[in-house]
Length: 125
Image: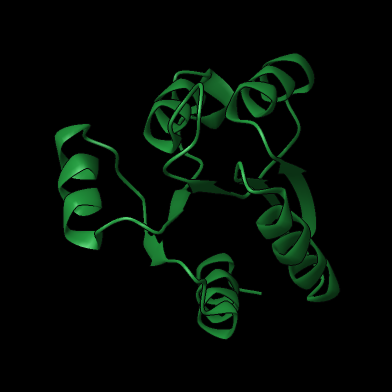
């Protein structure tokens, strides 16, 4: 159905979302480190349809990861969605300030049925 890159420093969240998205028919590449995710994307350049990044992560925030991923030619147009436990208003402002386009924002705890519906609608599957 599509390939999703999932990055959250909380491995439990990666495991749960990976399992649920996989059961829903998606191919999911999960990471609990933004640095490892970026390294893998640079080295292997898999075909991806959507990125789903946590915002607050050590070493590299989801915002910085999004900017680094978008700097890779192959991924310039890949949509990047965020999940966060932070204030949605503050996150939306930061997304605007960084000129990140083609994004969506989902609060934690993630409403999985809503997330899945949005992903399926967006990817038209």
